Length: 89
Image (cartoon, rainbow, N blue to C red; front, top):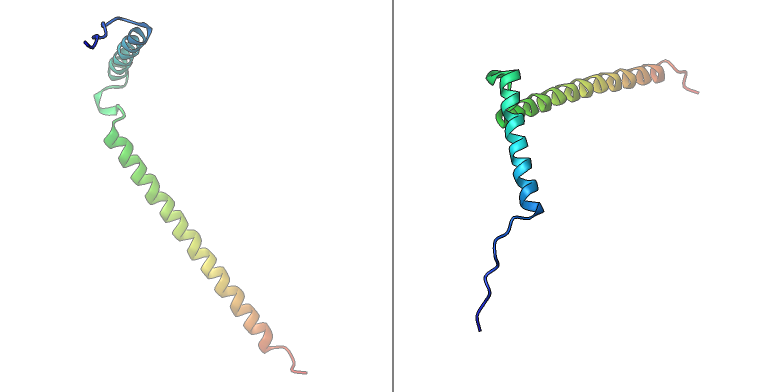
């Protein structure tokens, strides 16, 4: 019993992968030429942008929580004051 070795062949999948790989290389080179080295998007840049966006969302959420707390306290004070001035009957 012998195991037949598959013969390597170039198929449609291999050609598609090769073309896609070449296209990515061309786009990367073109982006570097047009945009410049310093302005290219990188994983580090994307991560930093995500961190900054998270911080901005947290700041907005904290500000909203502060405003809600102030409004709640003001409403509670108004209700307290209203009850104090009502005649007891």
